Length: 480
Ligand code: NAD
Image 1 (tube, rainbow, N blue to C red):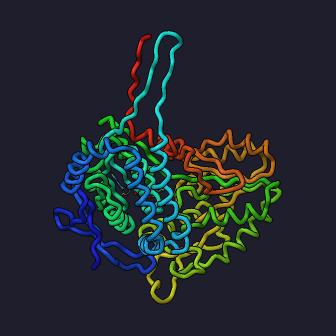
Image 2 (cartoon, rainbow, N blue to C red; image 1 turned 180 degrees about the vertical axis):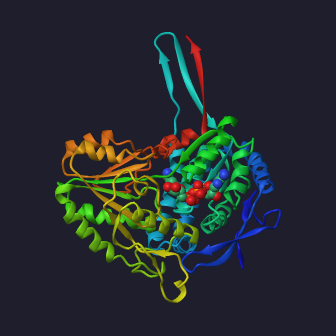
Image 3 (cartoon, protein in one colour; image 1 turned 135 degrees about the vertical axis):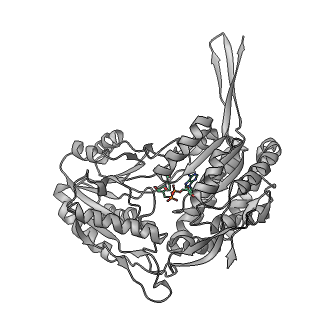
């Protein structure tokens, strides 16, 4: 079977212990490649390579560093079709979605931070007639970047691009469930002439290879995207070691629809924000709140359109909802649908596993599911499900819906639909979420800070903030 390899010190190599895990194609429910089951020894090798590469990479003129990273972006664009297919096979998403979202956003990440680093400047503060302060920012050293399976190359590059652009060297681990695009990416790095050891990709399990990265004393900063429970473990290990930490974690995002909204736009986008990528986007709006006067109309139309979504082979152009990433995840999602029933929910459509014919007969497909009649505080509405499952609830007042929206432990994103400008500002100001979208969803400007409040994470990794995260500030104060 095809073997994914680690990328360490500029070479594609097997893990030292020679041990591999099976990598599944979730649309077929079958293993299709092997992925290294790396351990602390492989991480040590990667840290050694990154430490050796750091002095030259961090001292390289930023224009030169930037040119290499931009070249990688160009190569991602060149290999769009191959990368999109690989991402779909690993993760289960429709190839079409990977082609228009995941892969273009991956090259955009590389390009944004590569060019941003050229324009990055530090500050000076003049203290009246008494002193001049200037701040220097130097790359922090060898850093660890760990990413999840839901948007594999997009989130992998989101972590490593600012680190590399800032002049750090990196030990990175993609999810063991979706290693293929990171593997292809390592080949692009070699082709682009990235110096040996600047980026090292160690594949393997979280508690083994991932934990070894977090614990390594020479890794001075950790940028992590994944679940809140994993984030807690990482913080518990890294905080006493005084590592810099950026944690982008789970969400349970509200989608608030006021009766004065543009109905068609709200409906159309809400279908996307509920079911894109099988609902496996941390920013999906899984709790829909609709103003009571429009509730029945919205629910009726929403259910009609949900029923029309084609669940199918990710290779098929017509497919809107592909496979969930793994059997374990599918069982978790189906378990939450059962919980919703126990909590008194009504399943208006969906609720079951989908059995397809042909090559996808054993795949992990779940019907897009719409649930009503639950209150905002039950477990179904408080815990992250991360699948094609949404609940819809009515509300009467702004204060009431703000209370519902803010009632979970999460605070990643929120969406608002209204044509009333004052209402939009008022509600946005009171929502405890890192991003609020008004009359849109998933729109991104990479210059803005990104990340969650509360248990959705710490550190806002966008624009300059991400470049700053990977640097260490020093103030020089000169008395005049
Ligand atoms: P996960 O936490 O299980 O795994 C994420 C990564 O962490 C994987 O690479 C995994 O191998 C690694 N890992 C696991 N245990 C580890 C440990 N002890 N030490 C070091 N690394 C470890 O998350 P997942 O299931 O891959 O991804 C889904 C989650 O990610 C969801 O909760 C989703 O909301 C969240 N997410 C958040 C964002 C965001 O931007 N806030 C974006 C995407 C996904």
